[in-house]
Image (cartoon, rainbow, N blue to C red; front, side, top):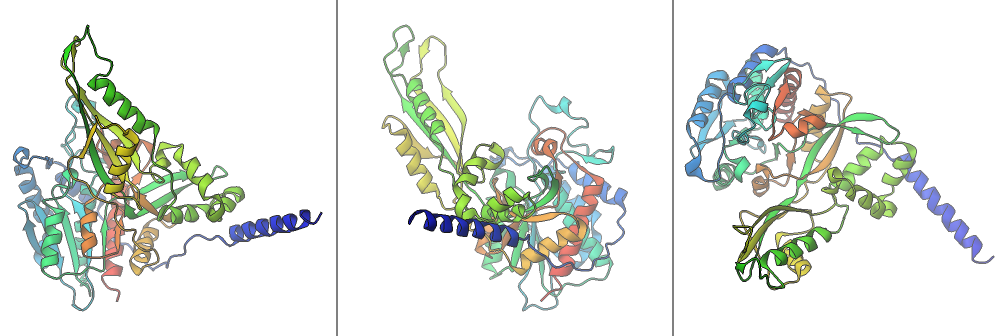
Length: 488
């Protein structure tokens, strides 16, 4: 009896704390700024985006393999499409193909802001050209969409930003703080020559930025507990790191009729199996914690209680998220076996075997810690492990609650008033990682509406954006620049 009552009282107190936390859970509240959107000519803005799509600016890892003409044509296309921009803003060509614009503010003491995008696109996979409803580089406007490579990734943002600035100039707007527009030409193959060179240039000039906005987040539809679905604007506050490790092993060659007990292929197969069966541990970290709390405020009572009390349910939530590939990438460093090479003929023993494994690194881990763990999991000295290509650690997580985040959220809500705005961790790599040298406030979001089918269109077949969604994208940047460049 003496033990029973303290346990009961403790249990009641815990339940009370859980209930109070759930009742107190509220989604973020952002200022609603009065906004009268300009009248945009949908046909005209769609045509300007389509013209940019017609420039097949495909980037290549080997610069010698890249066709320069489409990039030069795109520069001319943008100059022709946005005469006010090219009259009022200074434009610099960086590393031959990237573009840096500066819109000088009237008060030099205010920190500048910078909006980003990239001019390059990925190639169309050979043999899939006929699968497209409209040719990928024809820039066709049909059925309410602009079709073609780059409409989602991410010429829509590049042209949309310039469209917004052109409109603001026509309205007579002049910013108080300087606004930079930075468009790299090789984001799809690392950004080394484009974004990095732009950052080096700004750094050499002593430029310190108030904040940066790049691609990375989008507007998606999510089903909340209780069967309710709503659109969520996922604003990236952090970005996972990147690493590809090459595994290599050697064995004795010879005739397949007399195989040894251990072959190079068998050794490699065991190493890869160990990696796949030993995934990285699941962890809930920022900004995913904040994402769950934001979404929890819109969920049914049970899930609301769970997400309001992550201090208790953190492990359970992380394990549940790890079961679904869509959410597993938010709670662990991912391991993807992508390339395996061995052998030349079915009756000849392979003398060597190699494999490449790609990792997207969760904040809190590093390239070094991932490499060390891989060696420990494989635990076989016959398998050599080394990094290949570019590798980088996760970025620092941008603090929430900054004026920049509120401005971005307010611009989203001005165009999509019923939407939920939430922080997010970006799984892919963006050029924005280079800009952490110039500011700690780096955000990743473009107001592109994506459903499940659209996810496959990015880097895939039938990439497209609806004319209506593109109009709203332009309005988002119009509102964001107009408010942010004016604010002190």
